[in-house]
Image (cartoon, rainbow, N blue to C red; front, side, top):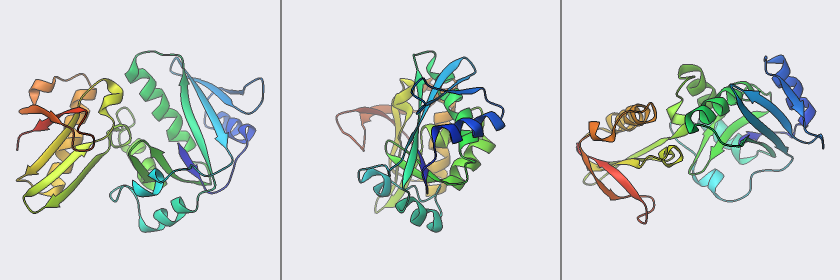
Length: 219
């Protein structure tokens, strides 16, 4: 969901997408924007209220969010839901979604973006979409890392959407920047169709949810 400082109407979103070169139209009810992006039908729904729940503020990503953006995210008053109608190849759907977001992130009142497990600032969102338009991995499967007493632990959150296991490191003897880049690069490789066996590791319980399996990288 794209977080907004102020509400916008569906027609404002439609006009914004039209100006950005997308073919957008309103639904019969006039409250949803429909747009075909690279063969994928997207549905953009403006919601004139903040995104409820504690997840938005509890999961702010420190690498992808500035201090000023944290405050703006905490004060957001509306959001856009961007979803796909029907099903196609999952990578095509993700790329179409990212292309639409690359335009919508330019809305004047955009202050952040929230997905399951991660919230990021608008600046981090725009940067990732600009630098990696075809495979914005930090948007699709953000990596979280931290240093503990016995080494660095980290995990991805989002690879499951591609039918892949999440990746993780546990008490690894690497620096936090090295761990972060390793998880991002490995995720990009897998999303592009690379094989999991390219990475030395083993199946293990995911550090976020032990009921789910992940691939623990050996370092």
